[in-house]
Length: 191
Image 1 (cartoon, rainbow, N blue to C red):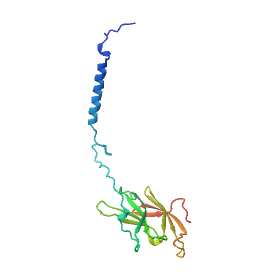
Image 2: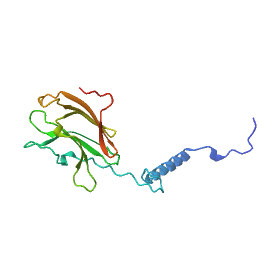
Image 3: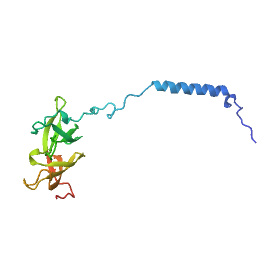
Image 4: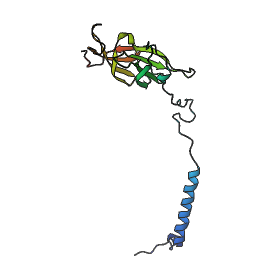
């Protein structure tokens, strides 16, 4: 075996005191680094002129709206509601299915789209999707990806009792060119 030209160095062998010193130094670095925190993350890159994302905006509350229903001594009942950004402006709208809170019978529904600007104290109705004057009941109501869908139950004539709708129609509303456009969902059939 050939001898090394470099003599054996004392520091190539570790002793317990060196391990303790190393462990202490690493613990000190970890403790010190926990005191230093990075700046909060944002979606914009540093130095860019991009604005940070807006804080989440609450959807309009239908209980704060005066719906155009003639309910006499009974109250207006919000049966269903769903919220989402329907027109792509970054602010949520609320779609509310409402009717008079009658003790019996099948009072017709109204379906309204609500919005509320930052400077407005109350939400307001911006569209009527189903007018209660049309004598329709709304079932299977949903809002998904900016599309409102519902099953509408109605009457073939004024002779049909209000307890027993005999016409079923599927409807879909979507914001297009500044208005809500109604269509029939694909695969839907009227009864």
